[in-house]
Length: 112
Image (cartoon, rainbow, N blue to C red; front, side, top):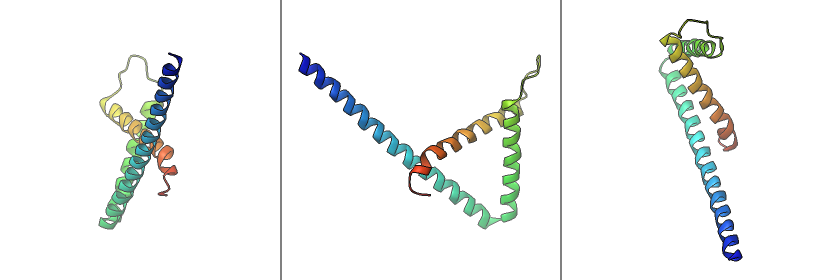
């Protein structure tokens, strides 16, 4: 009885450890692929038109700044958030989560 319970516990531990290692490798590869995709998009857009690339980056920066402002400001009582501000806040949150993901996983993949 005790040996079977111990073997079951060791088996569960090994399965969990291997699962975490596989998940870590998959997340690292996904982060490297995302980073490579972003670099390719930046390279192709710059080779197409540097002026449009800078203008697009400026507009994206303004959009994300508006989203950050909408996310972190204190709401005014009795006033609902406008839909444009909600979209900008969602975009800011998505970009912040992607940046955090890249900082955590892509920096350790050896592709930098």
